Image (cartoon, rainbow, N blue to C red; front, side):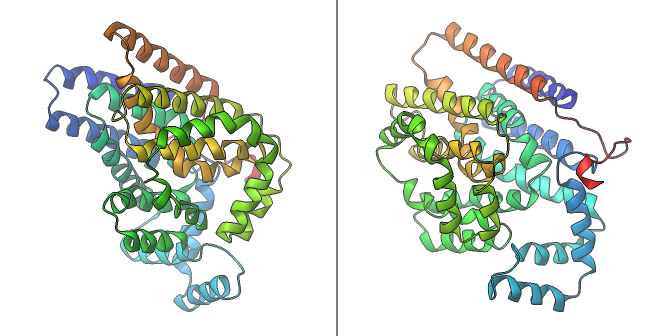
Length: 367
């Protein structure tokens, strides 16, 4: 928690300093680069006890690095021919990186650099002011830090491909998009659920789609398990069926739902007032995020599906606030109010963080 709050402060100070120099394309680019550096350091310098899976990933790094290529190819055959096992392509990537990188810490750095450059250069293409970029940075800390920065590295690697694939949607290069997603699915099969977005992103009446998702949200909750089961069937990822059939306690999903619904409603209002304020594909992604959010009441692990689409809220929220038809001082109050919510949520989450040189105890499930 304290590291996140410190990053809020550092990012805000950098905003003030750079804003005094005048907002140019170079200044904006430098600010995004500075925030990327902060995110990379936060993720790559973490202790192995930070996050649910970091220690497991470190063990897999050693395991796959020591594996013979014959064993890796055999695993690929077992996974994709006989349908046993999952995501065999990840072992191939880790084996190759073991030839280049000296240890797991270097891998954390490479992963973080590629992830945050891919994500925040996409953000930079859409956000034109430093406060907008600062808001996107803070929203990432609140909604996505606990997953992409500390836990879901395999899905993070697949998500990197989706960030780059947006340009192929916009350029109408279907086969490049499909091939990229299929390759990414070798690392994390859930990314196959992003395939239909090639067509959904182009749906012209994005306002209607988002409005329909918001209005139908109360109706969707009773069918959340059915939706989750359908997605497992659609993706062919049988190993994830246990999440669709889970009976776990999911009370923590409420705050995520409220934030996604708030962002989606704000984006819809801004879009209604100024049609070109937010790109259609961002609105359509938010509509899908809202539609899939009830699945978190089945199992919070199903957030991995939602995050392929909810990540675009990093662009949607700042643009929504910027284009709301309100006076300047009202917009300033909104910025401050949203930041207060971010700080409060960060404190309430109270994520434990430690640097790799500190002493930390591994999570209880490793014992």
